[in-house]
Length: 340
Image (tube, rainbow, N blue to C red; front, side, top):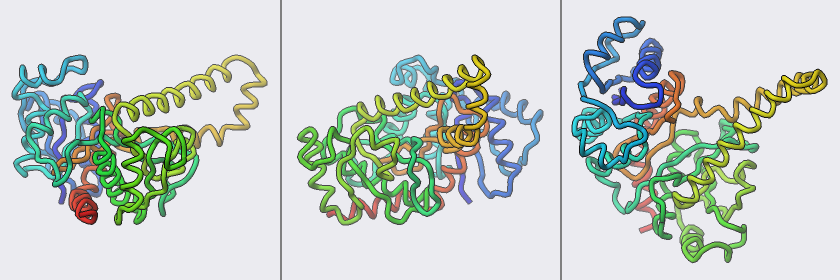
């Protein structure tokens, strides 16, 4: 029985969307226990207006939340009892097994750094994200790959990149039921001698790593193709790439809508392509993926998208519970220990 603490104050859409996702999940055939952190009176009043299973929901009081546009360090110092800090303390003390938040990413990472221990051998945390791909991955044929880091560690050493590979491989194995996920380094060429000195050093280390199925370097054009199950890079590059992939997806969708509205022949053509367009929407729908894991800490943390709707919150909680139940932290420990 996984206990998932949920930051009820986080996200662009606020508490109502988070509560909708939690209440919906509480009515499903699941044994997940959820702890809602936020204004206790407001949460209790809101729950009274929603259909839910009270046996699966607990309320924990906090005061305030971190606004999306504030500096995370200053915001946390000014709000010692804010929702993300109270939720993170709940995880740190063992009162919860996993945490989900759609709130301020920087504040979530900083709160984790303040209250959780890093896994042995991990110097820097990594925020991973899924992105849609043409290729299919693992036995479930998932249409997405994992990329990390996408913003937790802007500048990474070769050792950090190797650790990111271990953590990403463990996550892909646990969540996607992929026993041997392929791992690649993002570089400016597929050849081993391409890339910065850091990438070259990491390439050599990964090439002989006993627990990683390393397939070498990949280029930017390989990302949408899905050449690898897990793609590793530093946080600066990863964040730029992720935003570009999100932007391309939105542009394609907007162009299709614009074309449909303009001319009859275009509408006819899009109608003929409707099955392909539905598949594209499914592949690029980040709401179904739940959220992005923050890896490297001794605890399961899922960072949901700031724009998450109730469906995304629900899926993020399910992913968090699955990661705990399948021993994500222990799998990462094993991967790190295998190279020593």
